[in-house]
Length: 142
Image (cartoon, rainbow, N blue to C red; front, side):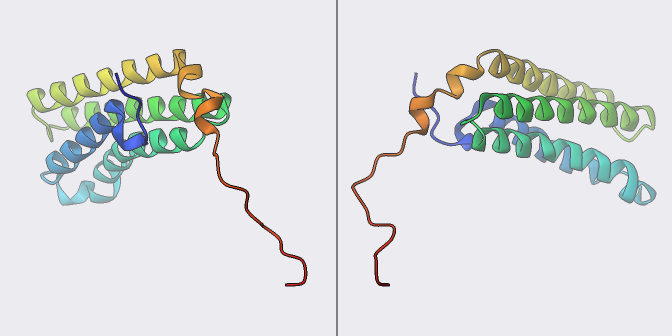
């Protein structure tokens, strides 16, 4: 098994991007009067899952920050579930559409939970070491 070199290589991030894309597609059919309420809320929550995962990746140096951002990602996937339930209740989504998205979000939630439980594997101090040749950062007289 290889190690991810970027958050874009994380399966959970890829799945989050897939959900975001699917949410965008299905929400195109929502009524115009929902554009600045339900449609916007649903799209923002869905897009935020991946964004929070990306931020967590950037904060791997500090395990508590990493876990905090993953927790935020999990909260966003749960918020997305809520807005999907609202859209389903209003008749804007079909039950199969809602079930597919909800199943994907639940899987993302499980994956985030596993990452949180194994945060130390992602935050290993040796992955944050940068080696470079000796360099002059300050040159006297300049």
